[in-house]
Length: 266
Image 1 (cartoon, rainbow, N blue to C red):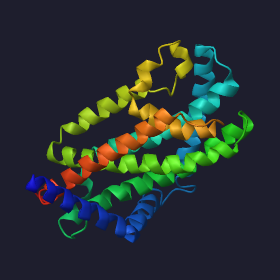
Image 2: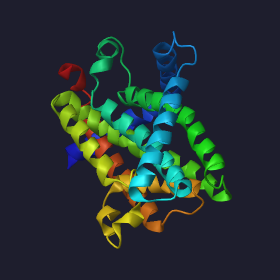
Image 3: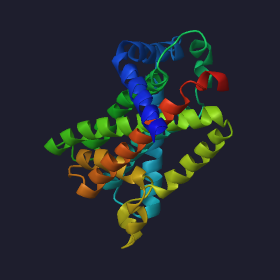
């Protein structure tokens, strides 16, 4: 019990120090974007353009397959596809572990969550670019934005905090067990098909309980529902807060217990 409390205390200090060093991971996240697109004319907007074209083509195709009205299906699919792309990118890139940062880790002493926050910052910038597609779809095809849309801002922050905690857990496990990266990639692909992104929950015809135990569905729903002009269900909020508390405690424990071993695993 004493060791457990010590691990939690050390992990809490490690994560707190990482957040306090916000200048570092904010700068590094921006620098990653600059370096990745330094010889590109429009930079990360290439990702936005390719995502927009994919959403347009797939919306037309899948709306015909499911027999859905394109005016309701395209906003639903566009928001879900972009949010899923953000979530899955954070998860799959976290599966690389701390290996991409091993040169820095072995030379400079930094709180390990700094590297995770750097990754999340970079992908959040890409998400901000892709949100242009969501706005275009909502105003051109959908019903535009409403006051309910403001709810998506705290929802986005809550899901980002969930993803940070999940990334800490995944990075530590995948650094220790490198084969875990393939497991994470496979599970992420499976979750895509079990989450209402391509298909709408109404298509389950009374079997919506099949997605009630999918936390990714609730993470996505508290962001997507306000943008579509309705408030998320209380159950979705409870799921999101519940998963955050669970993953936060687990991330704190793992960080406190294994922070001194990570450099030796690389």
